[in-house]
Length: 487
Image (cartoon, rainbow, N blue to C red):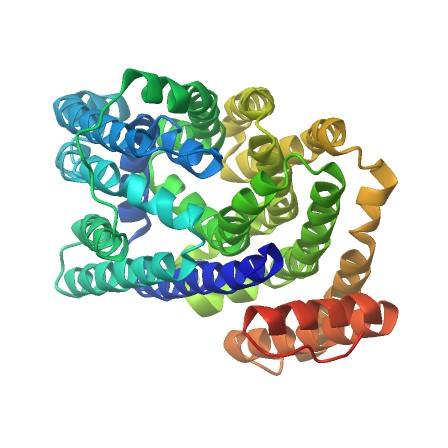
């Protein structure tokens, strides 16, 4: 199987994993949002700020080093496993001990037991990170898909059951812990690698020299991504954070469906092409255009339909989330398309460049959030989007240094998706204007989505038929079918 075939199969299974994962999670999220109050989501988000920060240190960037490294010896794997497991055990102990202090910081005593139980997540990460990296390296995305779908499904069943039984915020905790346990068991079942005792200082240095930059990037990424949760929770409380979380979770669902798939498949492919500049450049441009064809309509469509989405899916109690959702939806484009730029930096062995880029993002986010939080969650969302767009040219400049891609060559990849998306939005707004008094929220949402999708597909087919059929052919190859059109 050549690299293109591996890429297509990888995209298919990675898409099944991420899209299926997000679809199941989204359904569970809708059910839980109708069973639990905003405060419950706010409390778990507050706990997640601390857990996510500590989780950064559970891996130290070693997982990406295993995927990226061209020559991998058994000592690398054993050293990585025992290092990760030892660090995870220490983090579990530390987090349990620190739980009361974290609760006092947010003036939320109920956080202490939540943090104590969620601290067990670190052990799951330490037990399975090497297996996951090996499966990614081997393009074994089918096994990773099974892992994710089982974990989210069984965890969700437990969470929803607990919510129906009146466990409140603990249903969200139970959902996470069961999902983590199922993921660990599945990864050990799917991978034939087992840890030995071949621990080596030399091999640790090999991994850690690369992973250190990735660790730094992960720390900065945490502050960039989670500082809004911290500031909202600290200054505005768990209820405001709950409203913000609902909007942000939808953003995460959209970005994860595409960016996670992209990262899992593109990193090993770009890594194999790191010494072939022309092939790397073309792969980057093709991936950018392909992603944009899905990202632009998803982003702009959510801006147009956010009120109907919230009323139909979450209920009237979540209406304060609508303006936050509309603003954050604009960042979906930069978040997902920018993912490819970050992957190029890692694949080309320049994680230090990525570290500097994330540093800029972090500084911009923290300053922006700190200034905006006094005006509420809508202002915080706006500061996030503004920073995102202001720093995109910097990321492109780094990609240009590695690949030589010209600016206008890069921008051309977005023209067709943008035109198609604008036509789609116009049709959606027209339908809302004429039908809003005739249909309820659910019917209006379904009608607008169907109309918008139809207009978008037809527009792409009319203005760029070659691109349209390239996407169809790639999708066919991903699913194992022959090409629709002969070239």
